[in-house]
Image 1: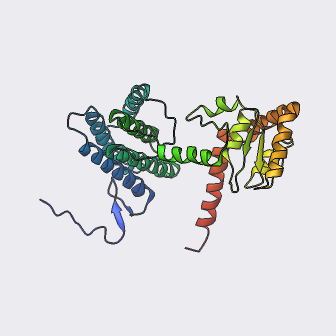
Image 2: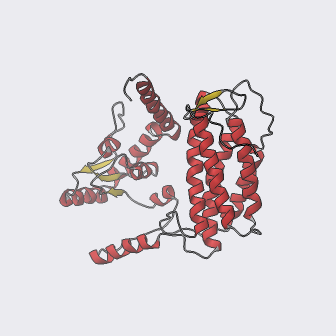
Image 3: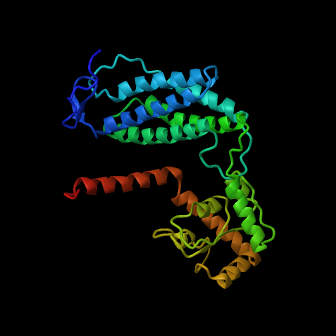
Length: 328
């Protein structure tokens, strides 16, 4: 048997398909490192499952395809890779497997946290590693385009492992919800003596918010609260505390002449909060008008595609500054 060590990597480089050597922290190597880690976690999951488990064949097939994917990721432009890629076909199978499992899952009415059975916890771990691998692959893809079947395949793997983690909890008759946290919330409501508090569980947020007249955000600290944008998307105005960018969401930023979509009050000011909520309750026409303004604001300034482009622009600007800086 040949020696495992070669000493050729002692200077911080490693070989890729075709014979070229690159730094060990090259994005191509980093991406493949994540895929290798993902394959190892899948191996842990398989080792914990009975040999006759229905998932063994699927996971084994995924592992073999990940090896092929890694060979393609390690292949630079202009170098032929003879390994046949089956990522597209396996992506379709992953979607079919997910659909079949999802059809048998119970609705989740509590707060879901990773954990539960050992197999479920490892599947959640596989999910997060798959997400990291996908992020690294997209970084590489922008520098040296990959076969997009690879990107779709790794994306579906994270979804698949999430569904499998939930399915594992259910087939082991293990409560998958964070009932302890839910009970803490229920107990807090009881201790405070608050009446008419409803915990709806897992719902379609957009459709559920359409049942409301308006929403209230009483945070003492925020960034850009998604709940306000969700409320706007449903055509519902908001009463918020003046934290984070709540005021900008309600009144609009520079170039936004749509108008006001709610009321903003100082944090921890009960009187101001009650007054704003009372005004929202009593002024039906104003409430409706604000809701429509909020809906237009989301449609005009917070479209999914636009937000992605904005984030990409921010990352590009940061990378340009970092690459042009002499600082470490």
